[in-house]
Image (cartoon, rainbow, N blue to C red; front, side, top):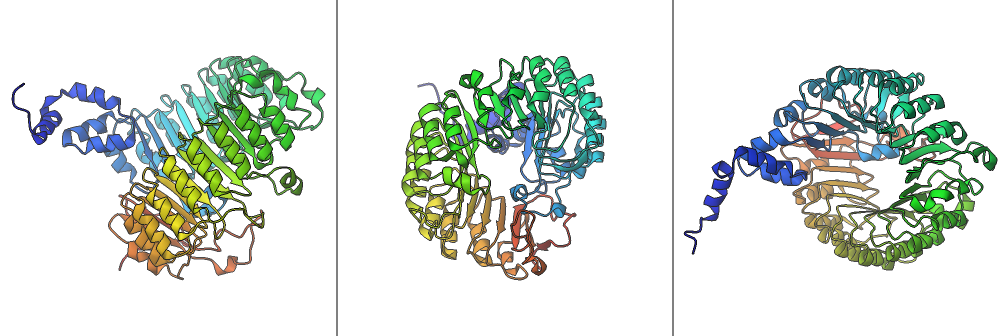
Length: 594
């Protein structure tokens, strides 16, 4: 009826080579944001590959040793935004030594000037020096709009002062959880004087000390400032800033230095548009009423560093019906989570961190299957759950799978303080959760020995088809469980394992069974003295780095009472187009076939 139908191969060739004008393809590619879709499109033909290269505006390099800066520059010469991740996530928990690597210098030196369109730089868990920042400022200072240094270390406030003085188009300056050498607060004064377009300023969870008068000056000059997350500063010193910041929507970092002295804070009035609130260090029951006037409009609330009891949490959260993000410690207890389930019907993200090792808090708080079930039933819009729990059952996991259909990120840690756990192993609950939560992309499960059998481990592999990142700890019973797990993980790209019973040979075989895997980090397994069994996973473009346990550290403890980071063997293996890295510390052994 309409003439001859073209063969699929001829149709594909016509579309890819000459059937669609160049300008139209550029426009179409501009609407494709997902990196995986972009990657697939770039493989259609050389023309699409070239258009992808010229139209790609943002790239995330998931591991800084996976590719060389020069190769990235040649592939994407018109990048406007670059995110670069360094040390393994375990560095956030003190499990990676400081001299491990992930230096920003080669990336800044080779990319800052040649990438002429670069406006945004995001470095995460990397070693950044003052010289690196100075080179970035020299090359991109006038164009730089976003600078994010996330959990980085090695630089000082001298570099921040240079940024503040030179980058006058800067809209975002992010320094959260960075280790910064504080040489004075002049950097903030320079920022307040030289910048009138800043939207977001974040130096939360740092040790930087600033002058409240500089914050007030910043608020006067930057009418666009909508987010400030800062290091601890007494709220009574921020009255002027809060009165001036009419547009402020997010604030975190204020502290109640004089607990119980509510009269000192009576004059603190938060801006009228504020809907994201966090920090509030040392806030107790007496100071809690400061939030009541606008609690009904809050969308995000972080209570991790407060002194609130379980009952205090119940009272406050009961006044916050519009919360979308809630971050607390496990002192909230099951009763607090029941209030969350009854009140916060719009909740999308819930984070329950481990509280201080305080017997009183353990007595009144602690999260179990009761609290998680109440949240799952009541908060059906949840997309993210991360929780430290004292007890958990298969039934609770099944409830999460039944009611939280939008979940894309689930992380559960079972604490080892409670002697008996109600319902182990958790095989059936994990299976139900994974089968029903089909949108899951990230999954973490850290249990205790006996928490998950080989059968449960095989379930995770079988029902995790869409998951790309996974962390597992204290799971499985034998090498066979790991192999069965690996055979089901067709799309898994990043895997972290801790405190496992698996052998080196099983780890190597498992890696070869996962076709999409690009990165694996393991700590605590049946390691050989040399790591020779890991060579079974050797293949082209695959780097294997082995950190043997240090005999001298077996009886040493860190300041927090935990064993030293090098008492257990560690393995990091990853796909890399850059070959073996040149900056390995001496204690790290690179493995490769003879």
